[in-house]
Amino acid sequence: MTKQKNYKKTLIACYLGFVTQAITANFAPLLFLTFKGSYGITLEKIAMIPLVFYLTQLIVDLAATKFADKIGYRACVIASQLVSALGLILMTVLPELLPVPFVGILISVVLYAIGSGLIEVLVSPIVEACPFENKDGMMSLLHSFYCWGAMSVILGSTLFFTVFGIENWKILAYVWALIPLLNTFNFINCPIERLVEDGESLGVRKLLKTPIFWLMILLMVCSGASEATMAQWASAFTESALGVSKTIGDLAGPCLFAMFMGISRMLYGKFSEKLDLSRVMLICGAMCAGCYLLASLASLPILGLCGCALCGLAVGIMWPGSISISSQSCPKGGTAMFAFLALAGDLGAMVSPAMVGSISEMAGDNLKTGLLAATLFPVLLVITLIILRASKKARLKRADDKASTGY
Image (cartoon, rainbow, N blue to C red; front, side):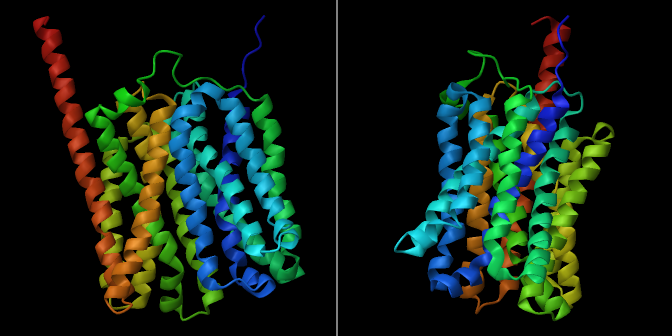
């Protein structure tokens, strides 16, 4: 008798995969001032850390279109956990060993950014390939674990630093590294299926020649931009609205945004079977645009804070929803499609916050002007969704006409 595969193990491994990604993305930024004080690194150099992190992710996203299918999901996703853990551990060691501490930090960042990029490319198609009935809901719930991971890292690290002192940050780095190390064994033992069988996927060239694929890319760019822009500037809103210190603003702002984003993904995960995904995405896109307008145009600071928090609720479904819509519209896209989608999302997440900063500076350090310009991305997302819905209706109509006429 054949033993039935336990895909719940796969789901748990993937949940912890996104928690690992949240650790790698959010732990080092909490230590920027510590790096400055301990190693004498200038703020200009420290600003390179997130840039190197996201650039490395982009390179991995692009490279994964070539090697992920050849090497196999299991080997790649196990490697993602190991290099993430290695990067976190080496961050405590290399700055002390190398003559230039900053180089040691950058090497560590590159390593765990490789792990983060692999997680981003592989975890979604691994869940998509599992024989679950409610794929949309599963994808949304899966991505909510990044939000809960981010909150846990920020709040857990803050509590640790308060109790034991920030000078003991290396101990906490080892604690966070345990999660990907232990999760390695989950990925070794859990069942993993192929998203598309050998020879059935479109391949990179055919994928790039498919018109609907480029609409998916635009959807992901707008999703990544809409999410990352407000997330990056959330602390500024908290400081201005509540009049708190920068430290509290840095922690409370991103936590509030992440909490609402996680709630949004969990709610959709629970009720997705009763909802039309593209319609929900349209509503969320319009709501997101409204939140950006509220944050940038409201005269009362507390309304700006409300715009920031509710934006988390609006953007929550965008990234996982875009992946689900892409999978439905292009079922033979394979790993290459997921890699390009991750690349597009990261590109939006990198370009838009930088654009807001540049426009704000040109407007005399007026952040509201920069955020007003960023409203472009949720508006573009809504327009793209309208085009996709119209395209889907046209395809269904042609299929019906063909069935009725026999041609």
